[in-house]
Image 1 (tube, helix red, strand yellow):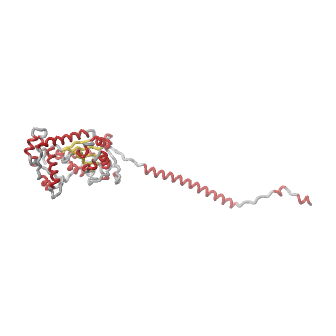
Image 2 (cartoon, rainbow, N blue to C red; image 1 turned 120 degrees about the vertical axis):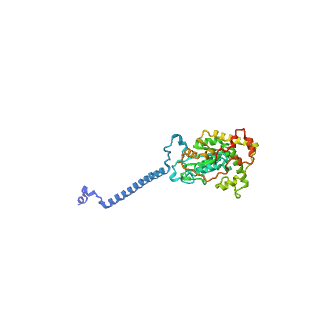
Length: 344
């Protein structure tokens, strides 16, 4: 009996585990797959985001530069693409701009000449910006002002802004130009600025204009208003009614001083790209203005000015002590100034 009670087969000690549910296994596998999928997707999105932001950054930084096409190699240093800080050139951003400066002396026709240039739709000449003392106080302020001007950030009534093809100024020789000529010549050469010299052949006529203009600054003949330039024949007639008396003692030294200053200016700027013009030549032959437009590389246009010439006719009718002036200049290199050298 005891034997029967204690007898077991081998199979009696093997305990088989219960079978797991197939549904539970599937659920575990599904959850694991979802977690893995979410993790892989998050990594992929981060990588795509980095690449995308990198691409956007490169587009923002890299800007296609403007190119000067169909321009001779010798001319490329005179072609510029300014990027103003104060406005956008928009569709004209890649339109080339040339820099120039009209170098002259007072009462040599530079005001009239500049109005002619500004009648061209693509030329901006901004007047005597160095007549303001602070701008010519030292060479640093001069060069800083030029930088602003040629970057199209100097605004005057002549500014044409976006589609300007030639930008410049009117600069009198006694407005810091001669004093700092070495630095200015170097600036012109490195920045590709072209010089337009405008002089007057008859320096005696210039002197008469200077004296009359100086007188009107105090007399103010035009209804209490001083005008250096006029736009009507009547105004011109009123200003021309004054006949200055010339100091004959200082006459020849003064003429020589102006003549020497013009000669030195041409010598100083001889290494720059330049053209030399004379007021009388333009009066007699205005086709010279086409040469100026060719020099600035702008399309040829008929140029116009509203200014009216003040002093007309022979000099003998414009000077109070004409007989004394004649005696002083006869037999000198300036005798030719006594005679009319052009007709109006």
